[in-house]
Image (tube, rainbow, N blue to C red; front, side, top):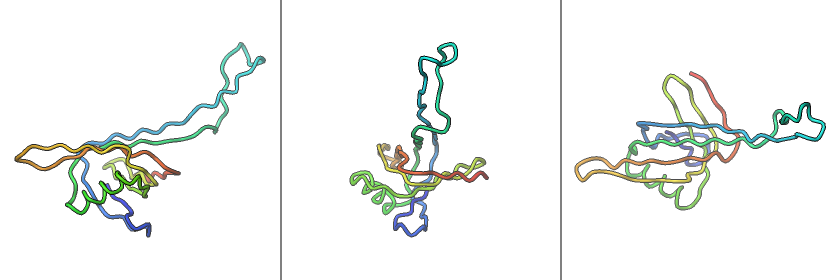
Length: 127
């Protein structure tokens, strides 16, 4: 998981994800009317808002990365993120952290789980 923390297009790794889920959604725009064939619903092609949500869990690279992500969460900061999924591709674009959870054992590392919500157009580069 990488973030462009300065806005200059340079991505820095902040965490390694042990698990991740990526979901893309598109709202349907219903244009059904009284003359729709057989009263079947009709949808407008290419319309509606698109959104994406990425959830993941893992460990932070270091204390500075942890602090950066916490700052983005508490202050509602939107940044460009890159999420690299091995054998799949890279998802890149503006996201806002909508949830951030921490967990850990007394004798182990601190783990996190977060949710990123898309905040603009995303790109996907297949591997």
